[in-house]
Image 1 (cartoon, protein in one colour):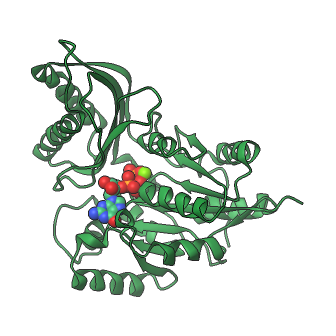
Image 2 (image 1 turned 180 degrees about the vertical axis):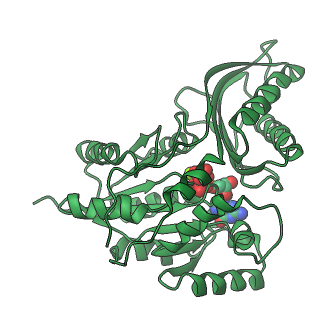
Length: 370
Ligand SMILES: Nc1nc2c(ncn2[C@@H]2O[C@H](COP(=O)(O)OP(=O)(O)OP(=O)(O)O)[C@@H](O)[C@H]2O)c(=O)[nH]1
Ligand SMILES: [Mg+2]
């Protein structure tokens, strides 16, 4: 009999550091001689996360146009595809950051229906400590509306492991206070502190999900109307565009991404819209291996480059994924204005893909109640 593949799902709210962690876990496993496959998921198409996973040359499948729970059969197809292509020992998947109830609608159905093929790890839920402190009322600062916060807290409630990421962003006292509050409010979860980007304490978390399996606990109650209303408060935008220097000269792609992020951020700040995650990639070549990437995970946070281009470029492919608590039309208007403004920098932009919408009401394919 073929050995079962381990299925590890890394959830958590938008911008918490899921993709960063998925890629590091994949590298950690590969370094141990394991074969991995990655499944990325999003409500729209044209994903920065998939581009990053492919740039890291991991076998990757993408499920777009709906979440795992609502597209359970596509998740199975993606897992089978990875199995056919590379027979991975471990499948790592990243659900949409506005999704919850993943244990009942994804982990348990996988365990019950496909238990011969997959061994399911405990669900990890990654949090950004600044965002989590605001949600738990430990700090002031711009927050999401009550129904978005409802989703955030439901994510924590079903976690097997709560991973406080980005520990470099808060003081030791703030971190301890957050960790204590999470342990008190969510006693079923193991709380682990990491700084994924800095590789800090990752083996504690990774070894836990590699070795442990999902424990059976009573199913969390979810008010699907509230959940749907919370998701519908978020605006989603995915845009791809070709950028070209008008006189055939070259431009600094890293500086340009910083300019675009700062322009978008100030437009959204002026409207009081809270950014959940603005992520962009500028690829210099069709292979997508040479790229610059930038992220901003709060309206009051300056965007940061996580990958940079080594040299100036004359043209490139820009991918924008923006999720914020705002009307999708407002996100579209902001992006349209920012791209039009690039003319002043002598850069022409031609849209190749554009979509903006609110996520639809979640309707899971399966829901296993314990
Ligand atoms: N300061 C700091 N930033 C981090 C750390 N880990 C990840 N980040 C940054 O957090 C931002 C968001 O990271 P992602 O991994 O894209 O987050 P995500 O959860 O996949 O986001 P979505 O897919 O949009 O839900 C990026 O700028 C990362 O570089 C960390 O340990 N410290
Ligand atoms: Mg991601």
